[in-house]
Image (cartoon, rainbow over all chains, first blue to last red; front, side, top):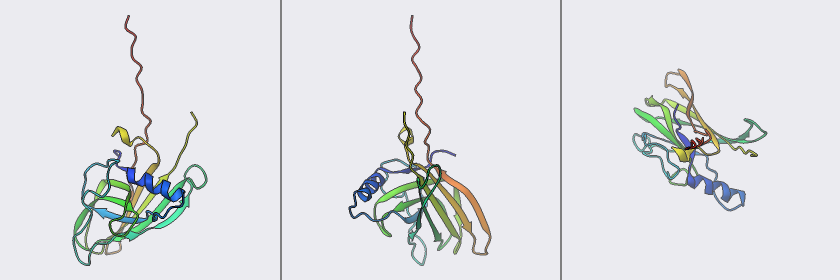
Length: 135
Length: 46
């Protein structure tokens, strides 16, 4: 599977802002889209965030937990489920600081596009593991 | 994609639940490339 997700540049600002206690919202609003432009660190939005169908598309607020991948609590996990309001093919998703607009934290282009019909749901789980090393 | 080889390590997993109740666990659908950059030494020219 090719590299297809990253903590984008604006996401770094979210982390440092929250570490120093300034008012930046939790980046747990999950959105999906139909764009497939490769992920770059300069991304600030999804390539083509969903806007079609009725009832209107809306991001979902994910559930946040600290989890352990390698060392205790080294991973931020966000889990949320989006429901399709029509026939579409989902090719990207991301985490934002708000239900609308907001700041992009993580963008992902899916290795496998997902065709959905009305009332199909996709539960996304984002695992962001922070690591460090001593040279 | 060279600028993607940075921490943190990210994976995105997906589970589809169809409107008829069918569940499709797609596993990891996106992951970051955290492969360290490799440096190839220059060959000595005699």
